[in-house]
Length: 166
Image 1 (cartoon, rainbow, N blue to C red):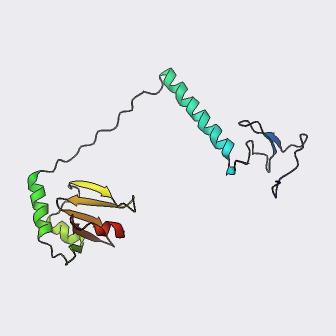
Image 2: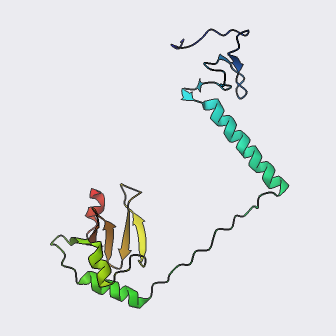
Image 3: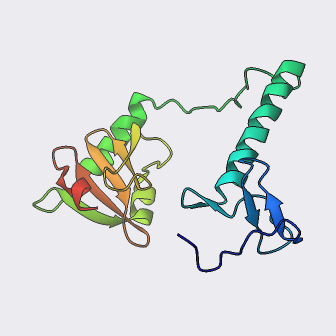
């Protein structure tokens, strides 16, 4: 099958090229193309494969020469340990909220901050099943998630149907 813009291969033409990756002859559309424009239906297939191959060879050489350490040390992060007094304070704040019948509430962030809820001190953090980029925070028996604007959606652990709606 001949492509629309396919050119007849002419070895004397300045646009004639042989792909350095797969050794296939082709006619380039412009003088800066050195790899096949498409292979197996994927644009720049040979170019990307060749770049990956060169990158891996470079990494192997650097490790052999001792230029890069085998183990990369991660920066140390200080983690704030949540004490029982902070947990109790969070539980008291959340227990006092006027929840709807379905066990949920949407409330202003400023109100919770004024009451003393620390958004950096939570039990755990998880992502929503349908949206891995959206996170919720777990405070004891409650889940908190950013809602619209400066509001937070809060529910208890017994009511997890809301996760499926997001």
